Image (cartoon, rainbow, N blue to C red; front, top):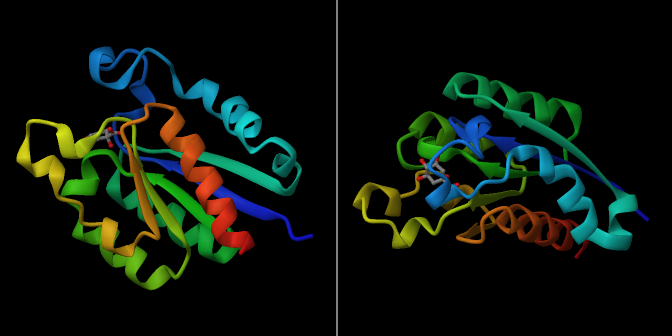
Length: 151
Ligand code: DQA
């Protein structure tokens, strides 16, 4: 049975999770993510290798995606933070990279008051979008990506 290498890629301000606007993003830090994802994957966790990367810079995120392609990463769970709503550069990268990407957000961006958050530059290059479930958004995204790679 095949194993899969999955990259969990977090963009700007997501390193500050726990301290940052907890009323929107919750009080957990990213530290809980590895354990949570393995738990949710259950038996399938044995067949998945997870890598985590966070950076505040647009270019560094693009570099990491290009590197993922070279390394043979099978798929990406991407929370691009505010770059979701602004970055044509990130969208251009996803357009050619040909890796399955699940776009995730902790908050339900469609329900937020700023209209700009309802626009995603990257969504059209994603196989799907999961938003609004806090840390569980990542867990749902990893499960969805696993199923996508499997079937
Ligand atoms: C976010 C939503 C974005 O609009 C925001 O800029 C973030 C976090 C989320 O996870 O809910 O930084 O991607």
